[in-house]
Image (cartoon, rainbow over all chains, first blue to last red; front, top):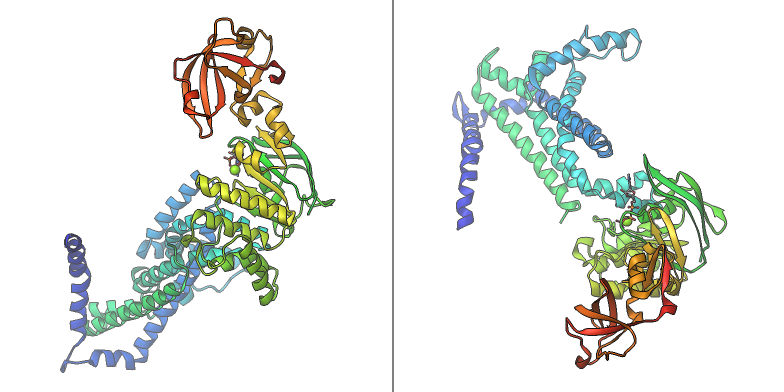
Length: 271
Length: 334
Ligand SMILES: Nc1ncnc2c1ncn2[C@@H]1O[C@H](COP(=O)(O)OP(=O)(O)OP(=O)(O)O)[C@@H](O)[C@H]1O
Ligand SMILES: [Mg+2]
């Protein structure tokens, strides 16, 4: 009973800030011109344009999450070997970088790697990597990775504390090379943290809007960009269709989370 | 069954020299304990032997083969860590089979050899448990089995028992000794517990400040400490400095006089004419079969051990006694 009472604040916050808006969106998504129905969903699922938006959102999110995760794994592993003060500095910088998103981030990338960006000019002059286009899907993946990597690093780094250096020593004495150790012990032990981090990165990327919009001004067709334009009424004003898009976005997130939970159950569990 | 020869080994971390000029020879099938206080470099020395850390100077040879530069994974040295270092994501069976799996042996051979060591360390029935489901003693036996299954030439044990409670410690200690002798395994056992060292070892290397300060059989190290440090570390030696030994025994020394607590005789009902040094019992400690008295005499406090006989023999605090010290077994140390 006592513990039930303690749950009330959590439930209140959840229902006011998560469930209520979601419910509202869900109800809106069923409103069509000819009354209540699944018309909005039908429109989305039959439209190549919206399907492309989902495909783009999924691919940018998946790639940037995987890229961010892999880079952050190497980063976190080497971060653990750094002396204390340097490590703290890196963590602080990472913290800042993971929060630098949206328009400022897009602007920073434009002056660095845009058509006439410093880095672009430098690379073009040296003949390397001459035709990289920041304003494309690849550019989006790059710019997403900018906040995905530090976010993943921050989330993964504490998990590395669970690794005991003696495991690697013990494995080595039993004939294991470094990669054996990571494959058989390091990564399996980290698996829950890696999966959890992946879900957060994926959600983060699926929901990202401002940096993408600022960079491509809507030229890359993403679900969030579509929702925004339907709500703002740039071309057509249809908030109910936007609501249906949002519900599908949430459904996709739930699907990915459920799949990862499944995987998580199969993986090694810390006690 | 291997011979180990180490000469001139040195290691420092940055400015701090951990050890220098370490040289020794292990006979085949011998168990040597490396005994020394915390921080004297025991673990670092073991890790160097195992190839987990590189040495700055010196040479390590096993069976006349120089392995100083050989990587850990191909040295053929087994090690048991103080923290056990069991792989938490693997069952007991998988942990133990790990080394064999690394050698890519056929599954039936892995199963047979694992089963044999599992029997040896008496862990049958626990094969499918995970490390966190085991007690400390069981974990340590898994660690031992995991190291033994690959049939290492040399076994290194880094304070394998220090995290266990006294009873399990004793039984596991005997078990380790038993297995080591049965397999004839050349073994280095690190400990900072002198009792453990005395009971287990064929030979003891006493380490202090990065040097081996004495080596010898348990009996010789205990009876003939080479220095004040060893005397203090090995037992509950009474150490008298120059003025104390002059006052108590009439012996002059520039170092210390070491007297073992069990070599002092106490006479409880002294007569005026009796020989011996007069003293007063200040404190009494029961150590099981032994009673340790703290006796004060001419301003010096001495530990004296007596067998715990009948209750009538107990000396109360404040009792007047006479001490008889056999001068032939005194040792002068520096
Ligand atoms: N990686 C390292 N970097 C710097 N100094 C180290 C490192 N490892 C050990 N040391 C230092 O070397 C010295 C010896 O350490 P070591 O662990 O070998 O001692 P030990 O005899 O095993 O002690 P204990 O009984 O507490 O385990 C210590 O002063 C320690 O601080
Ligand atoms: Mg140690």
